[in-house]
Amino acid sequence: KKEKLIFTSIASIIVFYIFNRIAFLYQSLEGDILTKINFIMDNLSKSILENIFFIDKTPESILIGLVGLIGVFLVVLYNSFTRNNRLEGKEHGSAEWGSATDIKPFIDKNYEKNMLLTESERISIDTRKTLRNNNILVVGGSGSGKTRFFVKPNLMQLHTSYVITDPKGTLLPECGKMLLDADYNLKYFNTIDFSKSMHYNPFEYIRKEKDILKLVNTIILNTSGEGEKCKEDFWIKAERLLYQALVGYIYYELPKEDRNFSTLLYLLNQMEAKEDNEEFKNPIDIIFEDLESKDEGHFAVRQYKKYKQAAGKTAKSILISCGARLSPFDIKELREITEYDELELDTLGDNKQALFIIIDDTDSTFNFLVAILYTQMFNVLCNKADNEYKGRLPVHVRCLLDEFANIGQIPSFEKLIATVRSREISVVPIVQNMAQIKGLYKEQAGTIVGNCDTTLFLGSGEEETQKSISARVGKTTIDHTAINISKGQSGSLSLNNQIIARDLITPAEVGLLKTDECLLFIRGVKPFKSKKFKIEKHKRYKELADYSEDNRYDVLKEKNKDILDEKTEIKEIELTEEINNLV
Image (cartoon, rainbow, N blue to C red; front, side, top):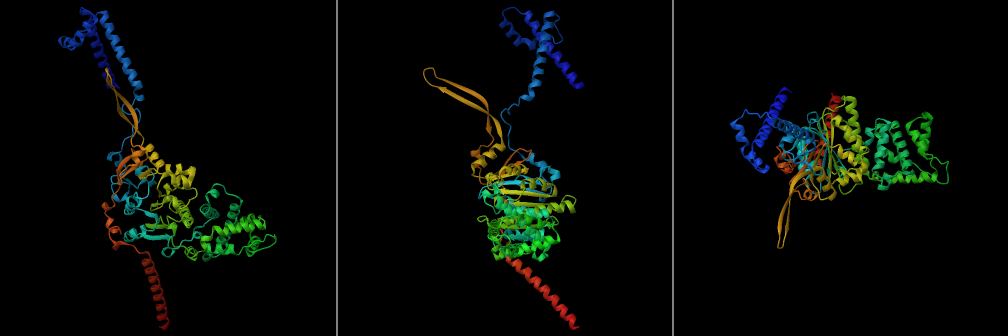
């Protein structure tokens, strides 16, 4: 404050001095006003240098000096008050591309502890360092390189547990050996070829009554048509009650080996309803009557009694609907792979594991199982983090959801993506365009996108996506020169300079990005226009099947090897027992 006061005082004296000298010269000269002004402009500095300490003490000169001082003071005061309202060069927008300086605070010194985004940008997986969540939205049309330029580079980092949606089943053979060599526990659920799949039993992850409700809700949500999803009618509500009753009975009353979809299907097949006989009782009715006599407050009994309010004809229609909904389980292979569980979803955050979920990107018949798997996985991991690990899993779990729109609808996903962050779980939805998210999650799509602090755009030909990306980059301010030429006898040329707004990148320019270019958005940081990550530059590229077929992981070969090892171990035990008996 003292320095500012000294500066202001000196500046005031100088301003008063200059105006005082101007007044003195003006009064000393003869002639018209223009002559005097021209003389002062040419000789003011000379006059000051010749007599630097002179101050005219006449009332007129003193007054002019003070008026000049007050005038300059008012101009400075006005500028100081209006300065915040004027952004020179940014009047219509200040968007500009980010640089190495902008990304530097987010990079971890340990290369392997970063999430790889582009050739020049990466972000630490430590959210305490970045103050950003690890959720990333990846948008890229078919052929834009979502797998090659994003999924594979991040798998090669080997810094977390991974849950990967693998459309067509190519990622597991190409990356499996690398993960095994790094001591990852490898798991896979294959809905294309059941012979190459581990077993997954959704009943294994039921712990409480609410888990039954979630399981049934996910089944119905992902086996309904578009109209049914919008409005749940009486028939679906009745189906829901029956499923909840049967699943509740299976979970609470049957031994572990019978808790699966095969048993559910068997119970449904034992049910029969007669239109002309309301008093008819099928075997399941008798089972629930017996259960009610033991415990009338039983969860399954309460659900079944509500279902039984339907008349015979109505009940028959409900049973037909149930049979149609669960018709995929008529396939023997599907019943077999859901008989027991090998995936152990609740252990994914205990140590480094990689779970590949292989789906058919051309057929959604079995995607309801994938939706159930993801729903249960998020639930059991969150519960384990809260109850066993004081809120945070010891190993971060990254979910790389390629073909996100094809895995089915995960109930309340917009809430999950916002809450799993604190449990050391991150979600990476990978879509072809923004319309896919809107089509699946409707009005909740904005919430899902908003909970991804990072967005990577790899290119898309979809017009609305191009507009959305352009708008997100923002506008910049440019100088525009308008040239007007008029012809004729008195022709003229005029130049008009204007400051106008322009998209930093227009929707058309978004669509014209080169195949090796991408756009990156990080919350609170300037957008980046960069090159896509070159997979060949990663130090582990030579461990992939992309580099050499010797690195290809053969699922059947590994499964047969495990079976052979198991049989050998059993045989050794039997031989040991025989020898001991002989002795």
